[in-house]
Image 1: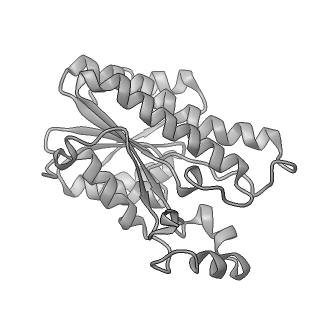
Image 2: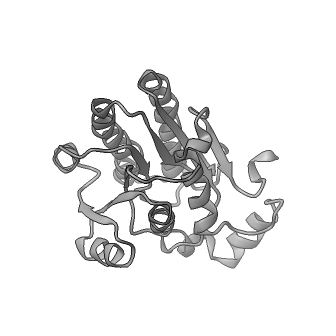
Length: 242
């Protein structure tokens, strides 16, 4: 069942490609969606087109996350906020960029989980959290020391959160997509010397679309996935099956 009537779901990174697609699917399924990000203007535009409620806050600031989530009655969360950072080897990485990637992709998701789960536990209705991870957490990708490390940390946050929140009826899962050609990814993955060799390693031979990621996210939030918790689900056209 994908009927979310009466359920409030927070989606971070809501103005991005995957986040926006998730907001639209959840709204179509009847959810009350709180769409969050840093740009008030972008959030208001999304809200006008979907009926979601905009909520701007800074994932890197615990005070901002705490203040924004205080008093919300949440049933679910999609941690979709993310930062790509740099393409660099361990020998070349800019540690300040590394710290920023970790701060947004892993620490930010943990902060949202920390304060959102308090609301979910208080309401006593169970719920679900889906973290948007990456295939880069499951396999080593050249140049992805920062991004891959942050998403591997996020997968562990998923597993430990599933372990700790299960007794409250709250499920926690990750989705681990391959590349979606968003603004964040096109500058690198759209290069001919990068794109073709990588696509040749994907059995389905193409990139994912935003909706192909949003659909499993909504499934994992739904009651159809009521016995699924603690998993990292590759959505990669078979890439990690190699």
